[in-house]
Length: 174
Image (cartoon, rainbow, N blue to C red; front, side):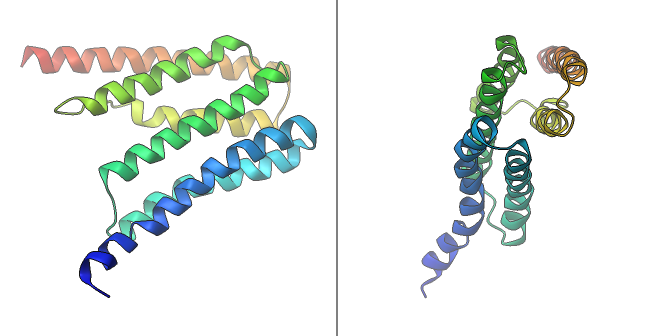
């Protein structure tokens, strides 16, 4: 096999694993709304594991790329929004939950489009934090738990925005 095809082929596996998360999103939505929270939770766990695996596979194959990292975040966002749409439809969360999630995603897109991407000390953990919120919500589907989680999300979001702002001020003053 020519070297060019070998190099391109190594990107297929981590990209495929990432795309499994995209396939899992509508299946989660359907299962959560129509069948079982247990099945939906299992699908979510599968999706979360693909999120962990795609990066590890890409690094082990020396197949990391800007495109792959960007695709990973886009698909994470699709999964997260799909899950919260299902939660919203069941009245587990209000519409305002989409605000911090969407603003964080927009911040990522803007930051990654700059000539020198913005290092966001907490922003890289926002997606993981939201995924943890989803897992806890599915494991403990009680109103009080969801209220606590929404407050934690709001606090994390505010701290994240403050952190980004302070970092930008520091960069601009140098």
